[in-house]
Image (cartoon, rainbow, N blue to C red; front, side):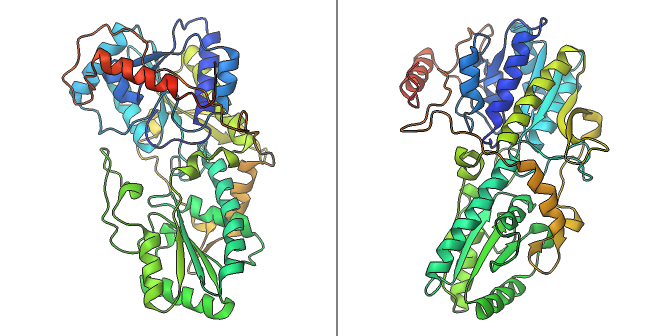
Length: 432
């Protein structure tokens, strides 16, 4: 796993493991801990013996706490050579990389170097939904996005209740969604007000407007309606955020010096409007309270399908959920060759944007709603305290000498024991 996770990422992992356990050509199932960084450090977890009960619990477990995730710089020759050594030492014949845009590029680079010896597939996960073809045919959406869309539908409902009762003093509520340069999630705020009765302003990076225009529209809305709710994508340009970047060069808005929300709250104060900010972080991609049952099911099926295709001889592909031709609302699982994924970053389609009106169109709602489905997933084990799937950290014996790579954690045996002990204690209420 790489990058930010989702509330359904472990459903994909459970699908991968289930299919691998049934495949006659696979003897062991290993996971990097954490992610590719763990693989390079030969820090591996053996998942082969997970039981059906384990996998059922894993299916409903959100985020990356089970096997971990990481963010790394693009792999160089030394790292690719080390990867080949680890694969050879542990008889790795298949490699599945779960992640977003950067992970797809990483998978392609690995396949160019190691694709002759190892069958490689990438599985998408990003709540941003910005991974895929611009036509949304080969990649209809990415797992995790529908559940995050549902999160924002609920948040708009709650924000509206708050704003209705408090606009005598807090005239404006401002929040921001994930989305570096795309408005997929910000646009999902409209799901909470399909009838357009709420004074809702949506700031989409695909329709970037000058700050004075945003403030003028906001001021007019407050004058007319006495209140307003603003939902902006984190990548919408409000001013200097003091941006910080991860190793792959992507902006990390959650660790930057300030937020677009705070800057907009300040600007509102400057024009005599009292505003309050609300900045959700990782919870929008991890909160199991809003998981879509359909999202879970398809995420699991995608993981299962990926392994089945690898076992059947396919390689060097992105596994995907695509629109089924001729059957509106139906999907199929397809593989997209790495040759077609050179630039698989996308933005909102023009027909989904209501340009100049700070909104999305009804066509966008028609795209998103069917992806969520009507059924919410049960919160398994979450009553008095959550019962999530857990692991005890690395448990595969190392067969190589430590690497001098920057990716090598150089943990001592004592450190490994301490980590295992910590995971044992942090059992999430699961007494097994």
